[in-house]
Image (cartoon, rainbow, N blue to C red; front, side, top):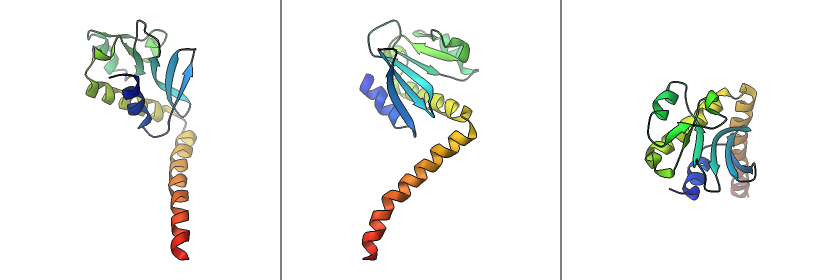
Length: 134
């Protein structure tokens, strides 16, 4: 597991965007809100992400998992290294983080994101349909 693996997992989730913030932090967002944060430079934490209120105390009891600096009160956890948890579990936790943040987006934002997806798929079909009509 490395940064490219993490990018592949996060960017596979619908409407995810990524950007570098705070000089050396890669942030993954949906609807403009963060759900995962990765350090680009070696440090005390490799990855931080949102988790559910009920999952938080269970996760931080595990070795290599700690309350995320500055974000623990919002139920974020941090992994000290990529080896802190199995990759399959990290992938599932990232999906859950995405779902938690997406569910808290305003309904209007959720609707515009899902509508944008269907509009794009229709516009891709339009040129193919036009060529069939000729």
